[in-house]
Length: 275
Ligand code: ADP
Ligand code: MG
Image 1 (cartoon, rainbow, N blue to C red):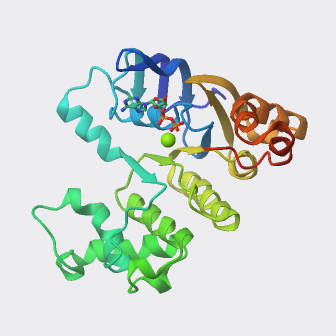
Image 2: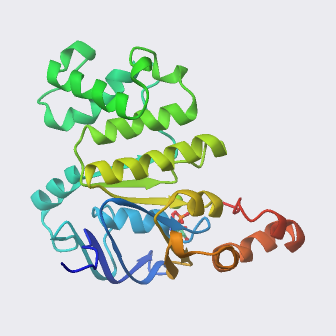
């Protein structure tokens, strides 16, 4: 068998220019594979969110081509794009849960797209969906919180609920845009670790943007560094030595860290890249 991993997402020479002047992506050629977490690592403004939003056609490339799950994103029509978006779930820095609703009902809303008409209240969901929502909550370690209001959970727990809500959609790709930016280091580690386990269990392609070098090094399978919209490195995490880690820091972070905090302090704080 071919040992090259099959890409579920493929960018070929993709550039994105906003408003005729902001080059947010600069000739990006990169692929993403299933069953692993690939981290997009870079400072604020380096193009991470823009890249993620091209994967399911939320942004249209200025030039170049993107293929996602075999669909040419830029030329796909409405129906093909809608189908594609059902296969691509997203989670965000701010978990976007409904705080006054129970944890279980928040997970059920991940299936709203599959239901006809508005649904109000947990028992408006078919039993099969409620059962699956409980199963997904168990997978993220929160079955005991199912009937609590979502806003009573910690940030890390709320992000795990958002992951369960994404999983009930049965996605093939999970895009995570700064999913741990609001979390403490221990909760961050737990969330990224969970993404890796789910990627392997569900054959998911996970692409996760981060600005913390240490979180990326600790929990990703692969790191793609972005700087000013361009890919500046692309490495399997397991092959990165501590000397390499410093060069990663150099290539994505030093410029802004030095400008904002002075180089001595920046050098002592390589984990927290300025956002
Ligand atoms: P990151 O997610 O790494 O912080 P972004 O992808 O949000 O970076 O932004 C990359 C660049 O593109 C930035 O210069 C940003 O200001 C610009 N940008 C992003 N979205 C838009 C938009 N909708 N219109 C104009 N400029 C944008
Ligand atoms: Mg962003």
